[in-house]
Length: 112
Image (cartoon, rainbow, N blue to C red; front, side, top):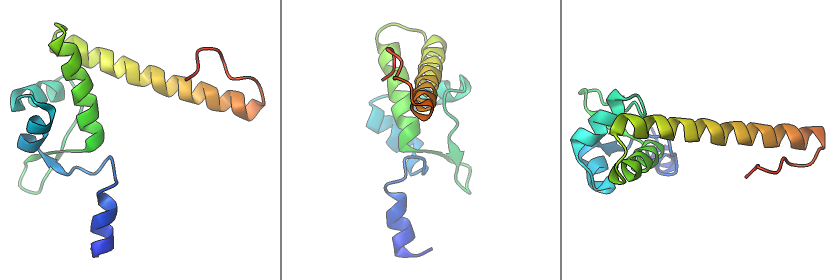
């Protein structure tokens, strides 16, 4: 791997750059919370060759949204389900908007 390859990974939202301890510190939460959102299948951290969990920036954003819901009293399992549904809705809206653009029709009123 060249130095250029390493620097390009810094911009990759999906590159698993953060250890569990660092991820928990960045989110202001516990490692147990990260395990819980993993068990709820909200995020699946990659594993280092030594078996340690590694998180990407994208996964940290998803976990941060779940933490926000939990901080407002939502049980962790429900928070994870809400985040999954929010993500699915956002993706469906994006696809719908692309289809409307490709068809040359107006963007639907609820589109982002």
